Length: 276
Length: 329
Image (cartoon, rainbow over all chains, first blue to last red):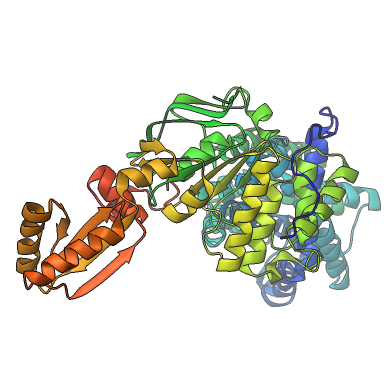
């Protein structure tokens, strides 16, 4: 360590304006998290390989055995489900990332700094949203490559993708809560699975709910992943073709999202303030 | 007395059944180094977490530069720097990016945060590694970056939780020099350590902590005077001979060693004199020790003198009662 002429304490330190602090801090944290994706590309590769394998698996292996909706090719049924499933799996990254920061002591440093209390969680979830944009675009490209076709319009497709991204953003608050609660990356991965599995598999994401046993159908029909998958499906295939109201599904999905966010955002922030 | 930078009054904190802090009290004058000395589980880290606004206390109060750590937490955060037990830096960012991030989050203007990062990299000898991801750094480099991060916002009060744990000798000496510079520049430093030598070399005052309470609070010189500055350990051939030697020394030389099995332990301010007298006497009595050790008092000796139990016992007791995560340490 050099004994430079630099002094550690000076009379005045200039500070940025307080008004924009929450936004500025959240962006700083989001930027920091996105750098990790650039420096450790495995993180991104891992979160894209898995959904691509799912597409190939269901399109070419299981797909033949699934009875799709009448008049709808299975690949067209499948892809909206895959889009939603991908964001659910991706949200596990939120849990693992926060648990890693907690374990490494980084969250302690952040909490000793005069930064906005919301910034670590908002920054993390916004960074994960940015990652989801990339992954969703990739999945759409893979979908089109294996024969997926939009039956309605480009606008409806884009609205569907925005709905998927919004749903993924909401879920990352759920998994942020999980990550902060367990505080260890390996445990976070393990703890996230039982939350995720029933949502993804007991849903209409891969197979129509009508093929499931009667006792499971009410849950599978109305849980958020199914509702969102159905909303996206109605948007890209046309609600009239499916015999459902597109607007109703989209509104149900949005309601689920708002409800989940209202419950889990305060819990996640509360956990963040207490976590050590 | 100078104005107090840190005031701690009756602070308590429990984690479930474990009492981490049991009414801890001390004051730290500005521009001084204060050492919290104690074994693992004594409550040092919990105290630092409360003072740096990371944890809320269950009872009592604490002020940093007149600001309450609970009520005025944000004001406190503008004035402190923390280097915790683990190097809390992002392994995927470069050293420079880490310091700039901390600067931005400390609400420095962008240009100032950048300039400050460069300045600290220079000062901590990290300029060459500044643009490498931190995961390629050695343990000592990470630690230096961590301490640098604690200084980004030019804090008036700096908290260092076991700053030299895991550092090699040159890095440790460099960090000690750094801490002295900080104080010369007007900073107040609170550090925790398990090593009496470290507290002695750096601190103006030392509080010895055990079971979440301050059991002694004094200058290093006074503590050592209370303790004797030299420890002499005589290993006798067996416990019977040790007992006989203990008895004879007490009656003839008025020296009162502590006996632990076959080992006799003496503390003295005049180690050389006592050593010569004791050895000459024991040799005459045909009680020549089998082994002999002369050393500086350790944390263990401080504990034995102040509490009657050894530091390891306290650590073991704390660990037995601690939650599985061990986060209460």
